[in-house]
Image (cartoon, rainbow, N blue to C red; front, side, top):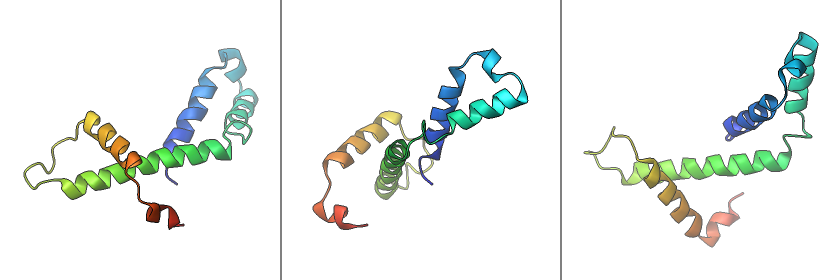
Length: 101
């Protein structure tokens, strides 16, 4: 689902914190990978937070597409604009949006 890239990034970051001697050998590698991808480390709460973050960016891109002119189509969108719109959308929510399940 959405946010999987953040989950993989977290697991990768956790994996990189271990010393090389703990990664060497197939059994050690598999054991460490299971540890990094376990539900003890990647909790349901973290997955929900990552999904929320990814959905926020998806909503922002939809808004940008809706207000995009024919003249600006195909030009890269500045990162600053994306972050500003994401912040505005977070502040301007309607109560009806929360009723959607």
